[in-house]
Length: 181
Image 1: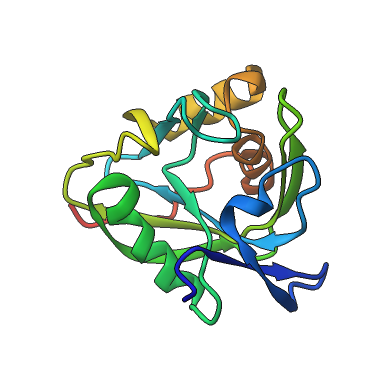
Image 2 (image 1 turned 90 degrees about the vertical axis):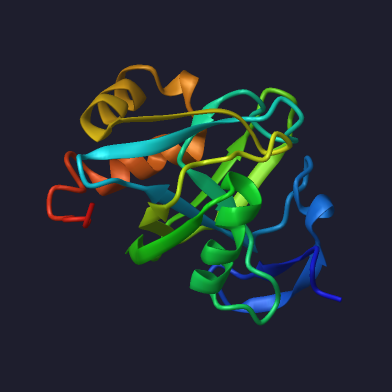
């Protein structure tokens, strides 16, 4: 069964095995495959979520719409679509990979390490969020420009991967996105 396995990868993102998801978020975290998704609407807002206090890493911090891990053999876009109902109670559409080579390593205050090759997607939400309380304790649709400015001014209030994504995407990354209402 591959339901709770993540894909271990080398620095070139070549698979090198699998491991149980719970075992890859500790003080000696191996490099593994993940994804991040930013949901954006037609009026220039991004869905920001606040991580549940029960999360292993960065509990209670604000971050992008949602993140996850593809299963062994699963296409990343399929994983992005699979996680949306699980974490946010909605479907996604119009997925676009905006940072295909994004990776990061960060250590939280408790010593837990995130070590991921993590392509970044943006997409459009279909429906209203009904967050899973085990994953998300709060959410807000807010202007992208406001979030970007806040992440740059107060990076400590956001997940480190989100702050790095903001810097990698640069100012006004969604100007050319024209989502249908």
